[in-house]
Image 1 (cartoon, one colour):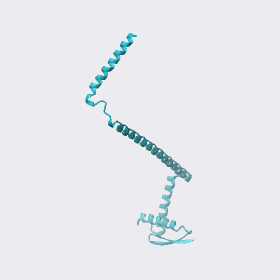
Image 2 (cartoon, one colour):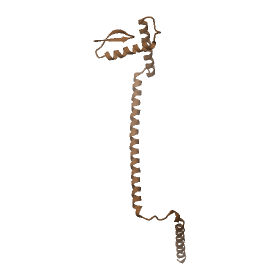
Image 3 (cartoon, helix red, strand yellow):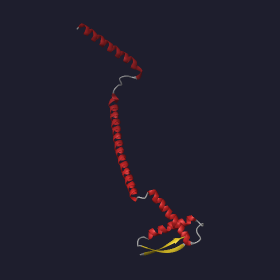
Image 4 (cartoon, one colour):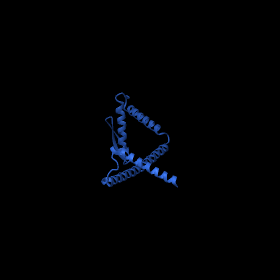
Length: 159
């Protein structure tokens, strides 16, 4: 057994506790001291009443916390496990999306590389049409197509 001295509202209280529980008990004493300080000077007339009020406030906070969690601690455990599973699923989905994004980036880079190779290969070649002379070239092409069509029609009528 160990003994610890708690300071609550400036007064020392010696409390016995199990070995290793000193720090936990000191934190609890600090909570009581905070609660009494929060109550201010409008407290009961005796020290015992003040400590009772602080204990009642802390018990009320504990009650509200239990209500928020629910009466079944196992239910909270199930909720935590469910949230952990949701988190794992979200992380897995994030990894999958990251892999898909990497694949899309690799494909984009391959296309950009192919385009660069095509441009490089075509670099020494003369362009077929310049923008300002495309109309005459299209007219020449149409004339050639018409001549071909006429020739084919004449051959078809002979046979």
